[in-house]
Image (cartoon, rainbow, N blue to C red; front, top):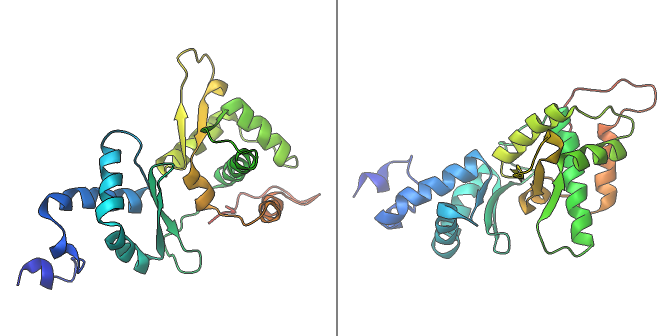
Length: 217
């Protein structure tokens, strides 16, 4: 019997994984556990996506389940996502106030695009995001654009968005933001009313000071 079958640090299915698939499978798990999302639309990510979807989907689901994570395979967007089960996952991280405001705003932009039947990528400029923040959170001073960029960097690391700097970009407000489907799953709302409840939680009541506490965790 091999060490792989007896060592409790190895998953029970590891001995059944072809030798040539083991290193890629480690990369897939590293992406899912480290970032939450594996993008499979370009480069090596596409090979990893196809390998996971076509050959190791059920093994990945079994591996993630005890961690309170649900494997999402999105064939249309070509991505894998380890979505936390809110009632059981112990891996949820806190978002800062700025990140929370931006997440809620981007979710609404995504939802409006889906309601309108948009089939293309959901894109917006940083300037447009700042204006949306002012509209949705009219009782809160919006973050400076430099603070928004810093918050976007973390969301990008978690593969919730992509950013692109146009060739003719002359100011930070021209930064392009693509909202990925993974963002809507990371903070799922069943209705716009649920979204409004979260917005109210993030907004101070009249006469109350703004809070620095994270709202989404």
